[in-house]
Image (cartoon, rainbow, N blue to C red; front, side, top):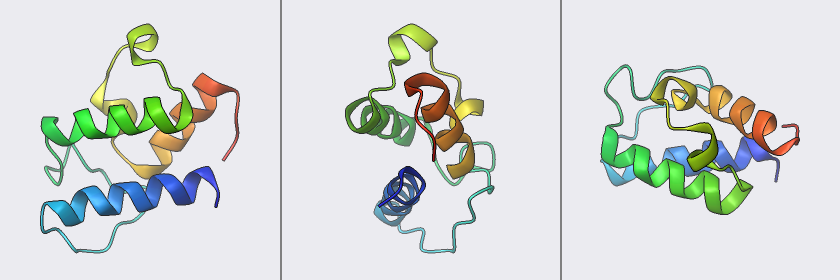
Length: 84
């Protein structure tokens, strides 16, 4: 399973926990359009730190950087040297 698939699956599970079963596009905004809130951001940050070793203590948390599946994958690549 690719990083992209892992991120997409995780984000879909977070949405399902909020009873949001609408389709999820990889470029679709999640936080800026209100589908996810700051509590979900905490779960996303924990997932990215545990699964991919992204260090938000070092890079800081900016919701604009994790607003879509594609943005999250880009962030992972920038902070782990990995590609999607």
